[in-house]
Image (cartoon, rainbow, N blue to C red; front, top):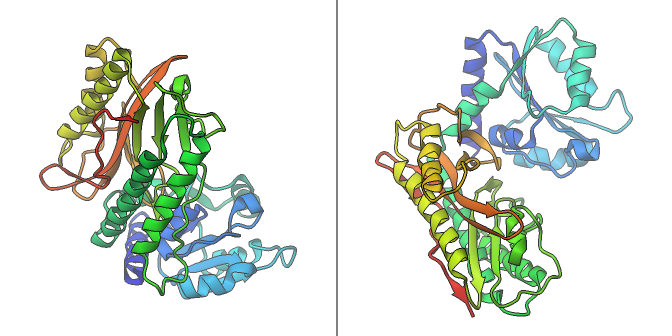
Length: 384
């Protein structure tokens, strides 16, 4: 995809020039990957080692990365100019950043305002108090909204990984099975599917599924984001699986949720689950080019209220190289949907202290409606 990365950088440079911005400084790892193809393990602010992408409006871009990952950056990045830095030497990342700002005589810099770490934002203000800092997100968000054919193929493969995880979970679920054993089965199922999809000569794309599986059972399904525990499943338990942090392949991530019932299901549980399904179905039926994002949410919300429930939370969000992208299917988002946009679309209800019913899929907006990226059965299912 190196040509795709270079096209994205060129497009961003055009937008910078149009808005009379001298350069963009990007620190968000997801955005750096989107534009350059490089992602690193050490280049994270959590480890005290940021990787930065400097893109001038009228010159060659640079990747600024810890020296530990210099060789990886040289092999992975579509940007040929890689500047490395070392801990405790010549100001670390500040040194090459100073050189870049001076070389390009930058006086108006776009930054990813919502993601930039405080230490970097603070340095920019201290070092260049008179340089104007402008929010890059409106430009970059608009670029990332529409996926190209290569991205969509990766996301369809990511859907295959996600649905393989759900199938593995179904096989593992049963009375007496600890929650963590279901999570382990999910990781194995997804990893094996990802390995099948990768060519033998893929040196940097890992098939390994990682991050903590979101999983709750029994009454704890009312807690939307609890992780798996040593609790053993009981007959009559609902079990909820959210794959949103682990349905990831080639650095693209989807939203995907499924819920099952162990051995039996009560009438009330079935009713709530059917309402969640109905709300999601209503939202999906509304998706097509030209529809306003918040209107999709309103259609789903009407289903909950007609069933006697209070207005609910967001119905969906954009997905891609980040778990949350623009636009969002929620109140206040007036973005018109376009072909190539990809969303996680959810249905969900929570009865606090009792039960949560949820379902979620990722989709792509087409010329006439939408296609599933996560085609997997979601009708009410009792296992065992």
